[in-house]
Every structure is written in C-alpha cells, then in structure tokens.
Length: 209
Image (cartoon, rainbow, N blue to C red; front, top):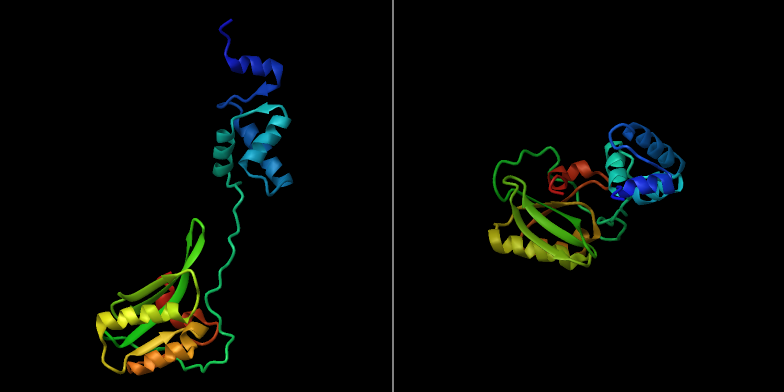
C-alpha cells in the first residue's frame, strides 16, 4: 500500500512522537522518568518510554537527555597514590615561600595515575621548579619505591646536577623510603617534604596532573 512504517506502528502499538511539535512533551516525560529512576541511562529510559506506548529512537532520547543534563555520571573510583602512614623519617618543608630563581635550585616530584582501557598505571615525574621542564619520569603498574627511583635516575642522568639541589616531594612512602632517600643523599640532594595532607605545599607539581 506504500504507507510509511511509522503509520503502521502508530495504529498498531501506540502514538508516535512528532519530532518538531512534541519534543517539549517528550523531554518532560523523560525528566519525569529520570526523577523516578535516577540511575536510568538513555537506553533504559527509551525502554520505559516504549512501555508507555511512546515510540521514540534511543538516539533521540540520548540527545534530549544530554541537552537537559540528565545523563547519569559514572563515579570513578579514587586511586590513592600517597601513603603517608609509614615509619620512615620525615623532612621539613624547605621551599615554602622560597623564590626559585635558577635551574637546579629546586626539583619537585610526585606520583599520579593514568587511566587506560584495562585499568590504570602509575606515573612518577620530576620537574625543575624554575623551568617547569620534566627532567625524569617512569611508568609502572606497581606503586613502589623503584618507580620513583627510576624517574630520579633519569633526571640525574640528564642534568648531572651539582650537590645542593633541593628535592621536594610529599611524605609518601615512595619518597621517604630508605632506598629513595639514600639515593638522594648519594648525589648530594637536600631533602624537603610537604606537610602531611597539605597539597598546597607542592602546588607546582600538583598542577602538572
């Protein structure tokens, strides 16, 4: 009979949604569903609309939900990279309020994580506080002292600094460990650490993340 398929479904299964004239009504219904079922995504909302005899494409539902900011946001698990609960010595903050005026005056270091398809990996990096250039870095699936030490070794090999450079980090176990601090002292670094639980003490490095 050369009738459009939509006409068949209109009479057979329910009323069709006119894209131009009824979008406001559809948006209201979608919002009502989202209020009743806060964790519904666009596919489940589409299924609910079909149960309500409203024939609408899931792509349109996705667009309307996105425009109305109704899409569920997945809460990502926080990954902790700083463990300050350890028995290693802690060092005072030597760079608080210091004016950094030249290269190799202060090196700053921190560890963060990078999300990948199968999970995440850890990144340890060392910056020159004056130039903000990355001097050394290391990536690993394990969060241990060897990750930080590898980044430090790269930075030392590139710059070969004279003794007296201040190495500043947080109080994480990777930086406070004997393995790491002995390596610092072997090359003549002066150890400096942020106050516990105070990210502002290492703001130069936090901004890299």
